[in-house]
Length: 234
Length: 134
Length: 125
Image 1 (cartoon, rainbow over the protein chains, first blue to last red):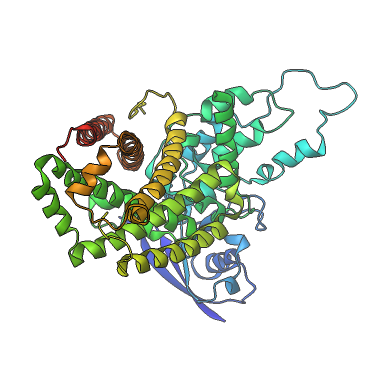
Image 2 (cartoon, chains in turn red, purple, green):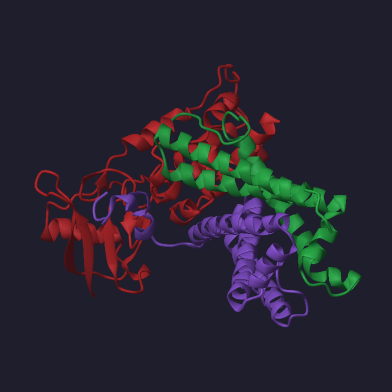
């Protein structure tokens, strides 16, 4: 079927400001939006620039705004959009480098702030890994699924308005380690997220939950994080 | 950001370029109703302060509140407070009782309760079964 | 970013966050009581218009004055802290936050004092 994709283009070396470019293509309803972009890049305009890698929802490279919502281009099919409109833009809230590629430096800076690595200086048991019970593993099961695609943070109005807000992804990562029974730096991470621009900046808007391609309920985890901070502060 | 007409719009520009979901509409409405209620409180304190100016002054203000315009305003105020209170309960559920898992159902359920309470309240107000001024 | 707080010096925002929720529930409880007092008291005392005489009569009861003082303080905290939260989302320069905090604290304090004066003045019946 023939469809028209409106793509937000911007080449800083040539263009003064971004503009919309329509592309008319023949696409199968089962094509992913990423397939459409690849088709355009291969057959029509090789200068169309976007990130992609695994193309099946694990690497998180191809996060972009499709029809007003942050999502992964490889996880959306043409037939998902019943209205037949296709508006493709870079992720909101991040500086645009070129076309659909945005600058993720700020995103990763904030992630680094919450110490997103395993911290436990006790030596591991000699004859096994660090054991977790099923209940302990269950506690972090959802938050470990995050692929750092940036859909959540880019969809968050609090993140749009406050450049210093840690954002859903960093807060989720903080929770992932705080709630991990094997980690020993919960106290330090709690201190970091216990900030006006940390966990207390979330206004439970829920855009992150709508955007997450791994269907993680990020707001629920931030709420749990806040209760965790609050219970330790009393 | 590009594409905005006036600089003061800058903090809001992305809000209207992103798809609206239930949670975002609830958040925006909660803020707007909150601002409206604060304005009402300020006006209300001012009007009650007329108690200090004697019976005539106070009763004149109360008579003003019996005019149709203010009665409509009272109904709108009631609806505003209902929304803000019920959505506030939803926020508390999300913050303390794990409501994030089912926040949309919670929102629409509370709105349904709100509509019923609103209709009952307006009916009793209009029927003048009870005195109307606040 | 400077840590500008509204009332009550917290260091990270968790107490203000908690108070906003507590005062919200408190205000809701008192509103329900207020609604019944205003609109159903006639079932107890007979239909009464809301005029100077009726209000003054209620205000002579100390419980009434205490209840409404609580209402005043909780509602003004909740409302003005709410305005502060909205303002902080859009104003980032330290001076603008200080300005906003000053205005909000001044206005809300004035309203609390004004309201308490209205509630506790001696009125001639």
